[in-house]
Length: 267
Length: 336
Image (cartoon, rainbow over all chains, first blue to last red; front, side, top):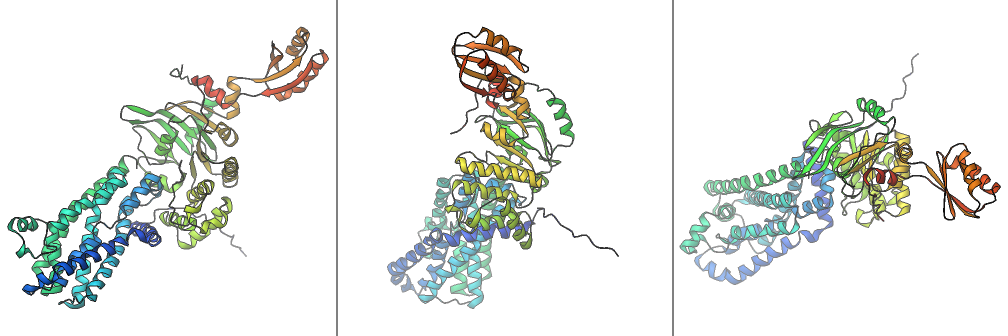
């Protein structure tokens, strides 16, 4: 008769895998946000405030021409809510405190350190979009494309929020400075205001209209408005996607180059 | 004088080091790291045996942390090579990371998470399953005492508690080699003693190789099997603490005496076995000996027999600071 000896397996570490890395990093970021709601609550309040104020101030004039101004203005409010929402400030804190070093001492894929944060950002961005969208519904906005249009609208908002995060992450990784990260919001101003966010493009002065035609946010807003007001318009949607792809290419390239640079120079 | 850094060959150390290199847990050859034109680390060679506690001692800015960062794959060397747990830190960084645990100088933690959440995250990043993480957290907390605080947010922890959590995180995946970069700097004496106990336990019970940098002479003396002393980016000497100390000086017995008829006393003292010399300086008689504690009684008896009244006798053994002083002409500044 043979008796099997009891086995005692020593638990050893190994690389977790790309997706598990992303989930782990995103999980930590979401826990942080849950415990620090003050970091994203202004992102709901400020656009809601602008939406209501603009509606009150300009709605009567804008609707004289038959424009559904509540619907027209809603994409602007969403863009204000989701632009600049990122974990870049906490990434800076991690870099300064040395926690980023600790993460780099694990076998985590370096790209997952960035993508995990972006996944957490998307969760927040979608939540903010739904919150502002609810305000729109409350004041009477209705989607001509139905629930499918609502989902496309949210997808555009999420993608815009995501591609814009590339800028603050690039700055965070490059400089490790909280002040520099806060300054990246300045990038949003030309994006947000040199466009037809508040007044239809046909009513803009010619020079402003020309500038707006070069602004990718114009096409993002156009795509979102199309699913609310105009029905399914493939041209507007494709223009919106192209604008997102263009901004995303620039911002993500900057973020990835900054990530590589930080890892190379020894965190 | 400080520039005239000499390499001191401690008897037996060179051959020991050569044999250690072949099966070393940590090995560095000609390691250099430059920042601009400044060489923070300038040609460091070292070998740490498996199961050894190696103390890396040096003053602030000597290059200790830079060496650790290179060995841990956080920083690429400008020149030279290094292997940790048999893996090349430049060519196989991922394989190195899996085999090492690291607690860096500042306990870098996330104040918004609980200790357990950080331990779980660390476990996940090291590919452990939920069951394995649970088991390892229980095992690690048996070695590193965090108590009930493990379920509190890290923001509420004391400095000592943060260091212990940092150490626990470094151990979650059962590393072969543990790097501790100044693990007790800034801690109160009680917390420091706790960390020392835990480091000793890890080495004794788990046979873990530990590479420990420190500015505390006493820490290196108490914990390390061997000590490497670094100054201005260069390793100036290495060896067992006792060997290093003996290599530069002998024990000194200083007797504070009353009475002036010391000629006979001095003559008799130098005849005692183990005594190298005896001299009078004011009211003090200084006796150099190979082993101070062994000659203490004979010296006291001799002084009494020669009618000198002894008010006190102290033994002063050479310290690692004396070793550093002998080699560099400077002191290691121990932080308060």
